[in-house]
Image (cartoon, rainbow, N blue to C red):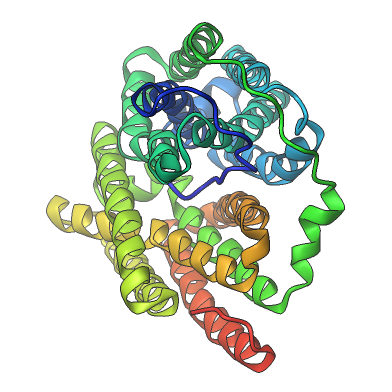
Length: 408
């Protein structure tokens, strides 16, 4: 998930040496690891959460939807409101808010309390990650900013591959509340490390929200963002309900965490490969390949689920392909956005981050609605979403060619 967030204006570089600056970014990466784990660990915990709160799994899935939608809405708003705050103060505060949100969620005895906790956690995540990237970029010379950003956002990638399954295992061994408490403790530990180790960094110039949203008037941008929403909704129609959807394939409760690890590894590989492939062949061929692979993987998994079981190795291969297809989207999408609005690159990629979480929220809502109809229906809905993404991509290409925008 290294593509979920982008930096705001990195601001003036500090006097920290390159080596020291990159070491500071490792602390920031621990925070993005906590954010990434928190955002997606719930997928492996939903049935237990539902039992504890005496609601259906679909109802418990609202916690994923609310987190994602809250992040999507709050990210640009908080970025505007907190622009002038010193970075270290902002980062520490965001991590504390993330921790509080997880503690509230862990102590919830009703669904409404859990929802409140997830909204608070989303606010902390939305404030932390873009500013962690900005701080990391400002700690090193300009020539090392790309590397610093890769380190900071690498925490999200590691969370995709390791944090979510490890959180799921913690939930299995100690309960879902313990998994959320563990994320809170990690956030608190990183907050202390940031306060003690990070140098003071000034805030950035304020950019009005109206200016941030002005890029939406560009045809090239309008052609890209809806595709992000549809593509992420397609993959998260099923992912948010990993336990029942994989269980329908004969995957046991403990094996679900192994499959989430496979998904995460696929996501990392797909993300990295997408970056290289986009540079070499362009964004559109990468997206066509990714959406086609997602449609096939989810379609085959749906067909296998009707039988009630499938060979574990086959399921693992399909889940890995699904993960790679899901997370190959955004490097290519970011490339298209930057090409369409090069002077507003940080802003449009930030909007893409909001579109990602909006898609996750909508996909989770669709999955919850389809759950009573059966797991095959959920897989079919996800596969259909990938096909729709292909059609929207084709339509977007026609729009951008007509208006002279660059989108490939």
